[in-house]
Amino acid sequence: MKPENTDALRISLKPGREKPVLHGHPWIFEGALRMRPACGPEGAPAEVFDAGGNWLGRGLLTGSGALAVRLLTRDPDEPITDALFADRARRAWQRRQRIWEREPATRERADAWRLVHAEADGLPGIVADLYNDVLSLRIGCAAMQRALPAIIDTLRSLTGAREAVVMADSDTAGREALDAEAITALGTAPAAQARIRENGLQFDVDCGLGQKTGFFVDQRHNRARVAAYARNADVLGVYCYTGAFEAGAAAAGAKSILAIDRSAAALERAAANFQLNGLQTPTQFECADAPTALRGLRDRARSFDLVILDPPRLVGSEAQRPKGMRAYKDINLLGIKLLRPGGILASFSCSGLVSADDLLKAIAFAASDAGRTVRLLETLGQPADHPIPLAFPEADYLKGFIAEVE
Image 1 (tube, rainbow, N blue to C red):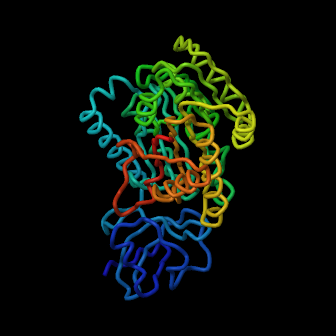
Image 2 (cartoon, rainbow, N blue to C red; image 1 turned 135 degrees about the horizontal axis):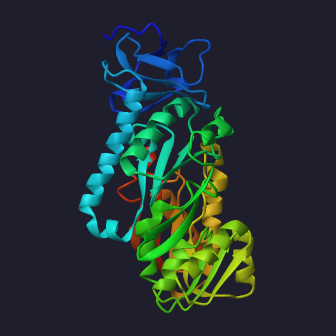
Image 3 (cartoon, rainbow, N blue to C red; image 1 turned 90 degrees about the vertical axis):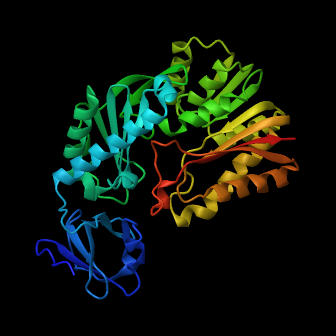
């Protein structure tokens, strides 16, 4: 039994609820607690014990809904200090170095990578992407705010990044006590622009603005796979953001492209990215609500050879699941109806609570309703710089399918 740290809160679990911790899962939920202090500040250190009084690990108290504690270590001799956070960041960098060594061709063609993948790298709620020479971080865990300076300093030292941009995650700001202004002030600038290369193309990324950390670096390999189906195709890109999928299709020889997104600023950047790469494919950028635009195209009897569906997260909680799964089914139904016989559907989900099977079922139901035969060609996911610990399957959030529609 590990002696209790008198400076930390003592957290006791109900009988039998220690199993996920022993298997390596970093989250402890309110429902697993037998005893918790009546109050404690967000981010306070906590010592976790099983029902028999055996020490399990230490972490940080969180006030995020049902989540009570984020475990940081199961090593009794490892205190929660800036040195721990710096070491985790350093180890995350070393993992990416090993990935680059195994993928030399990819590194030659890309200079935008995920450096820290939150819990998967032992840094809960924090993601850090490197865009050429700009480090862009996003935090969705108030308990980890104090860790940011050590993480930023370590990653800047390792990468030589000229700028570091830090943002509070807007998706979790409503349920986490995130101090957005203080978080932004930890960076070297509130925003910065970086020019990156990916799959033979260049993109300008507005870090600190827009979605995620500025660009969907997780789709790097998937964009190359989708582009393989674009030659001589009339392409529809839905939720196109800054046009990376569409630029890949244009470079691969697409006949025409219609790119839809509800953000006018994102579409301006998409058009600029096309100009940056000298892409000549006839392309229309349409600012519209995606489902509304899809229904309008259906009503006008438009058709395409390749439809790309890359929506934002549609299921953010279990309560949102029924509505979100209906949304996945509906947009895939519309996408399938817009495809010519033999056309290709590329459909994605970035909702962590939606499994690959869930998405595939939504597509299958959509195919049935559309009266079309759909054949699965490729199963896609996230690249190696977005690792998935076996003890933390929640890190597996990106999934996609490429299918042929008769």
